[in-house]
Amino acid sequence: MQIIAIFLASILGLFGSTLSRADEYPSKPIRIVVPTPPGGIADLLARLVGQKIGENTGATVVVENKSGATGQVAAQYVAKSPPDGYTIFIGYHSTHAMLQHLVAKLPYDPDKDFVPVIYLALAPNILVVNPSVPARTLQELVAYAKANPGKLTFASQGIGSTGHLGGEQLKQSAGIDISHVPYRGAAPALQDLIAGQVSMMFDVVPLSKEHVLGGKVRALAVATKQRVPALPDVPTTAEAGLPDVEAGAWWGLLFPAGTPPQMVEWLNRETKRALSAPDVRANLENQGMTLYLGTPAEFSAHIAAETKRWGEVIRKAGIKPE
Image (cartoon, rainbow, N blue to C red):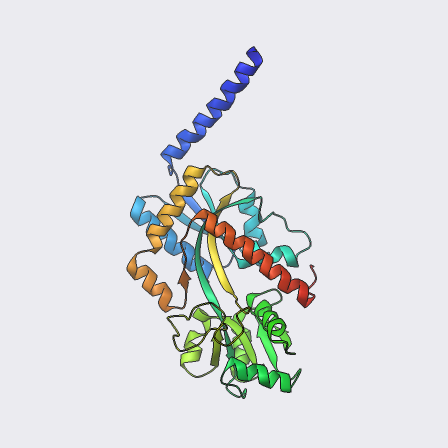
């Protein structure tokens, strides 16, 4: 009985210590680990969240970029970090919905190693074509592709990117034969699209918006359920009769598994407050972003749905894990 009493006392002491730390949270600098280099959308979101949380709460929030292996380096680092609420991961579509279908053995478990906190934002994919392509609507593009199998090409940011899988989704949903041309990143792919070296591309709205408005590429559809305020005249893929074609880049905040619920609740609440400011929301939406900012459970459900959807697309396309 004495041994049991000592064991219970130790457990209660540990629990009490955890609660105490949670009550004092945050008492030291918080790090947001970004899996991509400085200057990208993930980095922009992380710095915006950190700045606003600091202004609203007085907490010190620093951003740390750990790029490499399409996000695996940063994801592994955070997965193995102490679950004390001071290391946050800005995960995205690749690290939490795609890589598990494309990589034979990930150095982390997307489901078991993280606690979803909040779904930040979506940058919808937009289907853009070179102006020489004889199609002004998605329906016309599908008809042209069916009449000319194998003639059209679609660029992507690389194997397994949203541009690649968006193109595969279009092939599967519309039943057309178009050839994939992978690049090392969005910039060279878009450059060749403008030059007419490739026919089309699924790119995110924030990166293609100015080229669309400038007439360098023609926008046929946004791959999302609702039109994007930044390009209100561009119809959705659902309006064009292909509701299954839905793709985009998304980002959210996650803690290492085991982080106390009080800290999850705090970060969710303060992130909502940070990004719900009218000027912040308007600025992001004008760039082509869609903000979500729901509950941890809603973000968890989103990750599960995306994981299932992209797994099916990858399997049907015959893309094998490397």
